[in-house]
Amino acid sequence: MSKKRVLVTGGLGFIGSHTVVALQNEGFEVVIIDNLSNSSLDVLGGIAQITGKTPEFENLDLREKEAVKNFFEKYPDVEDVIHFAASKAVGESVSNPLLYYENNISTLVYLLQELNKKEKSNFIFSSSCTVYGQADKLPIDEDAPVKPAESPYGNTKQIGEEIIRDTCKIASGLKAISLRYFNPIGAHPTAEIGELPLGTPQNLVPFITQTAIGKREQLSVFGDDYPTEDGTAIRDYIHVMDLAEAHVVALQRLIQGKERSNYEVFNLGTGTGNSVLEVIKSFEKVSERNLPYKITGRREGDVIAAYADTNKANDVLGWKAKRSLDDALKSAWKWQQEVSKKETEEN
Ligand code: WQD
Image 1 (cartoon, helix red, strand yellow):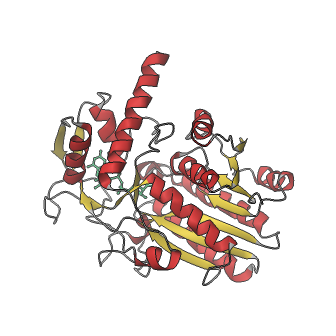
Image 2 (cartoon, helix red, strand yellow):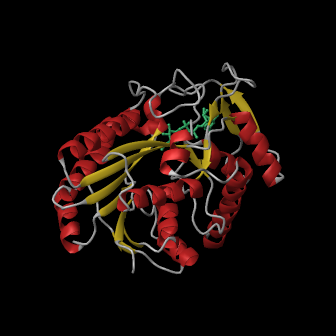
C-alpha cells in the first residue's frame, strides 16, 4: 500500500530537502510547498538524483491565506504536514522583526486553520534549541525552562510552539510534535543536496567550508574568552541526515498512534558538545586543509554552551543520531567542493 502523501513546506530548503529524501526512502509520497525565497528549483533535481523520484512541487507563498486554502482543496488527501518554511537568520530578525513575525507566524496559523478542518491530521514543527537561551543546566532536556528569546527569530519559534500547543488542546483531530534542533550541519553523502546560504554565511560550518575553498579570506572565531576548556563556545552539531531521519520517525509515531499525548516536544541533538576550535580541528583533519582563522570579539546574543540531553529522543521517540562530527564535516566539505565546481563551470 503506497503511503499517504505528505506535505513538506520549505521542502527545497536545507533541512527540508534532506527530510524529503528521508521520507521518499521510507516510501512516502511527498508534495513540497516552497516560495523559493531561500532555495532554488535545482534542489528538486538533486532530490530526484538521489531517490529516483521527483516530488510534486507547488511554488506558493504561505503568507497568502487564499493560496494555502486552495492548496488543501487541490490536495484533499494531505493530512500529514512537516513544516519547515520560515525565515531563520537570527541577525536579520533583529533588524527586520516584522518580516519574521509575518513570515514565521501567519503562515503557521494559516496551515493550522486548514488542518483544523480535517477529521484528523499530523503536524511536525521545526523548532530550535534557541528557545532555551543559555540553559542553566547542561545537557539540556525538554523540561528546561523556555527563556525570554534573545531575537525575534527565537521568539517566533517560542510563539509557534505555543500556538500549536493551544490548538492541539481544542482541536480533537490534530496531533503535533515540535522538534527542537540543535545545530544542523553537513549534507547528503552524494553531495547532490546541501546547505546553500545566500550571501555571507551566518553559520559556522558553511563559513568554514567557504573559507577552505577560498571564497572567504579567513574565519573569525567569535570569542575565545568563554568559560570553556579552550575558551570558545560549545554547540551540539548534528548531521542533517540524522535530523531528517528523526522527522520521519516523528511522523510515523503520530501516524501509528504511538504518541503519549496529542502535543509532544523532543530535542534533536547528538548529546555531545564541541567547541568552535574543536570543529576547526576536525574540519582540518577531514579536509586535509589548514583553515585560516582569527580570534575576534564575541557575537551579540551567543550563548556559552548548548548541547542536548538525548534521553527522551532515544527512549521515547526511539531515534538516536548515528553520524559523527567528522562525518558531518566531511559531507559539508564534499558538498562545498561540488557547489564551487558548478559555479566555476557556470561562469
Ligand atoms: C555556532 C558557533 C558562534 C560563525 C543558530 C541559531 C539556531 C540555528 C543554528 C536556525 C557559535 C560561532 C559562527 C562564525 C564563529 N538556526 N561562529 N564564527 O548561533 O549556535 O545557532 O544557527 O535554525 O537557531 O541560533 O549557530 O553556526 O551561527 O554558530 O565563531 O563565522 O560558531 O559564535 O559559537 P548558532 P552558528
